[in-house]
Length: 59
Image (cartoon, rainbow, N blue to C red; front, side, top):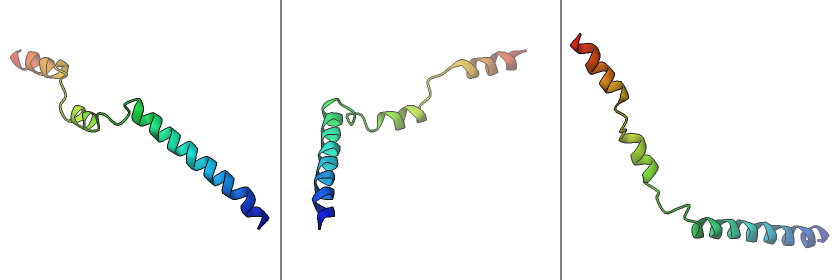
């Protein structure tokens, strides 16, 4: 029984810290753009290697 008197406040404290971290992440905009990274990895705008291939094929 004496263990519960120690574990319950620790669990409540950790839960409140997790909730505070989640609310901070919401407020700072961490979850605003959920699809941006997925789209950036699919649509590559780098023209470097394509230009080199075209230059080599003309010779």
